[in-house]
Structures are given as C-alpha cells and as structure tokens.
Amino acid sequence: MQINDVLDAQLLETFRARAAEYDAQNTFCTEDFNDLVDRGYLKALLPVNAGGFGWDVRTLALAQRRLATAAPATALAVNMHHVWATVAQILERRSDTRLQLVNEWIAAGEVLAFGISEPGNDAVLFDSNTTAEEQPDGSVKYTGLKIFTSLSPAFTRLGVFGKNADEQLVHGFVAAGDTVRSGQDWNTLGMRASQSHSTTLDGAIAPATWVHTRLPVGPNADPLIFAIFAAFLSLTASVYVGMAERGLQLASEAMQQRKHQDGTGYTQDVRARSLLADAGMRVIMLDALQQQVTGDLDQLVDHGAAWFPKLVTLRTHAGDMARENISVAGQLLGGAGYFRGSEFERLYRDVQASWYHPSNAASAANTVASWLVGPLQD
Image (tube, rainbow, N blue to C red; front, side, top):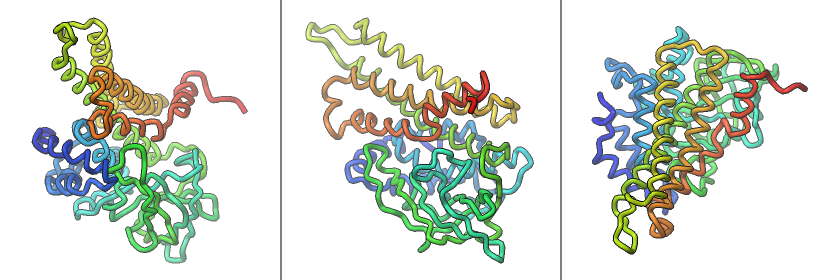
C-alpha cells in the first residue's frame, strides 16, 4: 500500500476543510479519525498478513508528514497511537519482543495513547511523580496525573509509567475506564483537534501481563528508552516537517497569485523570492534529515552515542523551521491571512505547539553539547 493511496488528495482536502471547524469548536477530529481507521491507517506498521500495510518507520514518518500538511492536529493525535506501534517495531527488529502485545492489540482494533508527561517533571522518562503500587498478583496500581494525553476521546489502552516503593520505574498499560479519567481541560492556543486532555490515574490497574519493564530511576541504556525517544521524536518531527512543507506551499501559491499596484507579479519581487527560497531550502534540509534518521532506524544503523543528538536535532529543527516557514507564508499571503478562520491563522497557532514537545530547545542543546564535549560538571 502506497502513502498516496491511503492519504489521497481528495481525503486530504476533506481533512483540511474540517480542520477549521474542529479548531473553532475545540472538538476532537472524530470524522478524520474514523476515516483513518476505516482505511486501516492505525495498523500501518503491521505486516500485511496481520491486516497492516507492512510499512517501516520511514514510510510512516513520511505519511504523517503528508497528513500534517492538511490537518496538523489530526496528525498529532494519531501520532501517539503510532508512537507505540513504532516502539514495538523498533524493539522487535532488534530481537526484543516485550511489546508483542502492542501488535496484538493493534491488530484487534485497540487504540493506544501515550501517558508519559507529568506536570513539573522535566526528567521525563528518567523519574516519575506517579506512584506504581505493586500488587501480590504481579499487577500494578497507578496513581497520578499525566498531561498532554493526545487522542483522549478515542484511546482504549494508555501506556504509562510510575515509581514503585523500591525506586523503580514501572512501565505498563492500563485500559480506559473509571480509574483513567480525562480532565476535559484541553482549551489551548492551537492543535485543538488533538484534544490532548490531562489524565488522572486513580488506582488504575495494569494486569501483570501488561507490565513490561522495570528500570532504575535516572538515565539508562535500556532499549525501551531508546525506542520511545526514537519513535516520539521522529514522528513528532514529522508533523512539523509537514507544517513547514504546507507553509512553503501557501507561500508559493500566494506569490503566483498576488500583484503589486503597478501590475508586476510577486514572482518578480526580489525580496519575496528570497523569502520563498529560504523557505524552500528549509524544506529540502528537513526532508534530507528526516529521511536519513528514520531510514537509519529501519536499517538498524549503529550510531552509538550520536543517536540521541540526531533525534533531538531532527525534532528541534523541524519545529524551528516550521515556525519560520509559516511566518514566511503570512508575509507573502498579505493581510487576508491575519483574519480569524484563515488557514494561515490556524497554522500559525498550531505551530506554536512545537515549543513544548520533548525535547525542548534547552534540553536538545544540552544533549548535543554533552555528546560533543561531555556533560556539565556538578
């Protein structure tokens, strides 16, 4: 199955038309999500004989990028399901089958979401404010608050982690239900259709067979940590690569349509051409970086200590360049884009979410600097 067959031009135009209404009403992208489910998109990474498309990470990343050119919030929402599917594939391709249950769930039609982020926890995966209470039967009871839980209205399984009494970080899955409560508090500047509500875990039980990993507090080299970072950073970057591409498309269309008062077209305006060329160069650079990083994940390339710098560079530059390209589109579209309800106005708000995804700019800079000259001394 080819990307353009699944996400054909007509479907993307339908998504683009819906995006304004979802944004204005601050509602979940229900119709978009159902269309993607109907086309089998949530099973894309599964083998064909298991009901999937047989895609690899690179192909999925390019598909998410294409989806984001039409509906960034929809792409960001389904991203969280795809993150778990990608984590499972990254591990499996490295002979680690601990998340085989994820593939089984996806094949059965379950929808997964990502319950990792917590308010005030800048250690991200290396510590947790959520308690993980070990039960006699091997199950784990989770109590705490998770934030930015994209896909809140649709998920049936939530990947979470918390800290037990032995100072171990316990990773598992819980089912949607009474002990997994949505805060219904997503009222944000942009990416509104993702409906990334906070989620309260009120003694949510992960059965023993759903608890897959126990790790010490602090940084460690467990393959699960690499897989989560690799999946989350590369797929989140894809959303912003798509937005950078859409900004370039809007800017190009505006230049071909607009004329100065004297009748000369914007295509002959040296300043406008320079703005557009810079935007085009940014998309070319992002495309090369995205293809290389995701392709290397598929090919099991061993970058060693360079892997995390590569991943955070992709994520950080994708957000930075998307903001720049959307800004260029605004300059070339003219004042009409400044009005509420225009595609540019929505994209300008949506792209601001790129500031907040892990790894943020400061964390990314520290990661790369530590790779080059070692960590900061105490």
